[in-house]
Length: 126
Image (cartoon, rainbow, N blue to C red; front, top):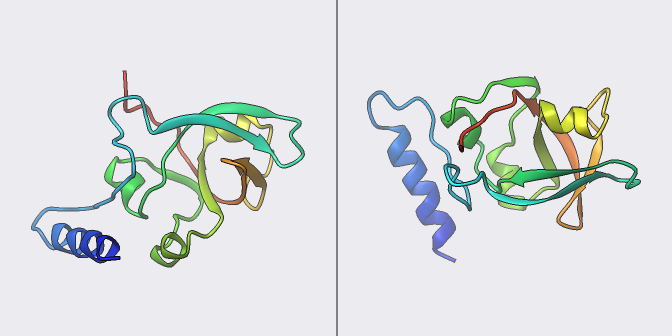
């Protein structure tokens, strides 16, 4: 119960530090393999792709320097509500053959997510 308040206070404290441009948290650290791996699929299951998945705060990708190509980032409210929204990579959009990815619905972890953003492909693990 106290943990979400702790993390919110931590993010605010870090954002207030001089020179800090972005702060983000993720359930899995990014530098060792990129989240956990699972299959993403179109809702109808016709296309599938193996992807690194991060459940993260809105500042996570900006803190890593990942650029947003289309759409928008996830909001704090969406994270708090565990809303079914996702920002996907440009490569995942191609792998799933989503010609217009914004608004597309994909399946991850046996849940359906609405794509709200497409981020530039990033590599942060070797």
